[in-house]
Image (tube, rainbow, N blue to C red):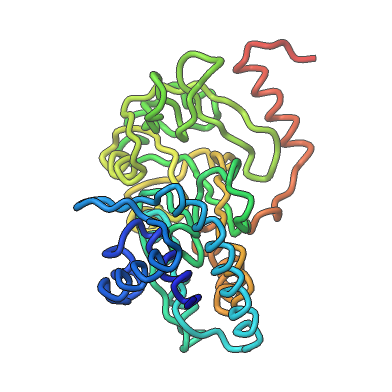
Length: 344
């Protein structure tokens, strides 16, 4: 038996067909088809159900795949452990992230990384889909989505935090005046994020379960407890870029990522309001298959992202904040005000 056929079989199973495997690997479809036919003949069973438009594993194919997958990964890990002995990062690194991360944060950092390591090539897949690094053969997936309930075989590394801040246009400031306190926010129209899976909309994509109406969640910039501030949404939208453009058109106060705002600040299109307060922070994680973390290129990339991506996003690295007792006491008092609770 030719054990290379295990590899070909695993490729086809993971890419859901001969054509997809050919596009991803460059191995001709005719070669893959011939090797699978040879493997099926040797085993005496059909590994795939074949139709003009679909290719799915048979029951025997699923059993065989479970074992082949482990064998192929062990072989890959053995090779990669030797490659890891090479000091200089080389070769192709495949990265996936959300389109907004690619556009606003990641591209500049990756170009700097390639300048530092001339033998490295990068393929960046920018998509709104959730990408599984193993199934789609990615070396690194960058995500701001929650990382709970992930498959246990994935490596998860915290890279940075995305910070949102309240902003508005100069025209809106002129019409409504500058908000000096959190209570002033209620006088303003607000641009809010619409939760697709909820009947009501709330800011930052989180459905409100125990309260009616809409809230901004704000925390003291220097550290302290978060405060939920009632707001009046005028424009609800699930796309952050659309919210940005609505803010430029004076549709309301908006809570936007810091990295969105460099040009808007420089050109006077938007103004920071309530500078002592910040919105929620989303943690940026890197997801990678367990066999990829030891590669020198991937390891160097993770180190580079941890060092430079927070600067690109305009925030500190995770864990570098601090808490002020005075500010924390003030935020607790404000929360009591908005909740209608008496102070102790």
